[in-house]
Amino acid sequence: MFSLNAFIKSFHALALGAPYTLIVSGLGIVIGLAVGALICAGALSPSRALKTVAAVWISFFRGVPLMVQLLLVFYLLPVIGINVPPIVAAVLAVGLCSSAYVAEIWRGAINALPAGQGEAATAIGMLPQTIWTRIILPQAVRLSLPALVNELILLVKASSLVSLVGIWEITRASQAEAGASYRPLEAYVAAGCLYLVINLCLAALGRYLERRMAA
Image 1 (spheres, rainbow, N blue to C red):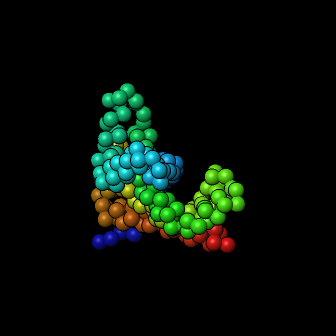
Image 2 (cartoon, helix red, strand yellow; image 1 turned 60 degrees about the vertical axis):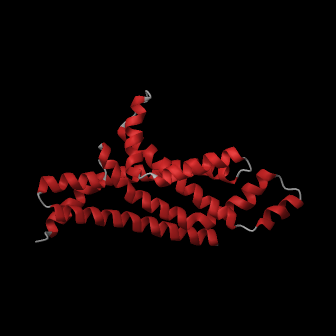
Image 3 (tube, rainbow, N blue to C red; image 1 turned 45 degrees about the vertical axis):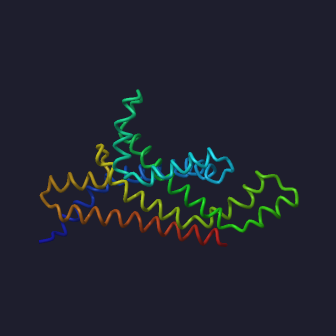
């Protein structure tokens, strides 16, 4: 039988792992936005070499499962002489994986803008950097916001994989609680509810930002 008391106890225990889930997914999306912007610039560049590098990057990080990428980063860094805590390797792997999706999101948003806007701005003498910062990027950010919020929600769920390298996030905490209490059903239901609460808050934040940017 399902025990409400065991569920509440598990929920409180799993809440201790929530900060690590938020850290991994939050820092992951920050890295994804930064690296994704560079990859997007390469994909939109007239240079064939940059286009090729961007295409290979996007194909690799979208085509290889995140779990494999996580293990590659975790075991590769010590081999090349870089010793970092597991959470750093986890954040790096999540961020690099996210960068490929962010690059495609921004590329789609920029390509969706009417080409005439940039041409009109050039015709009146605006500098290229001004065109990007004042015309293209603000509109691209607004168009891509729903997709970026969705990417962050996906990262929160994907962050469960970092339990493989010993990060004490929600999934790892639920496994420990299930083993300690012998109540796996309550522990995993609590984990699902905690993920749901986090993602509902992110979805609400995304809708709020959409309304603000639309205004």
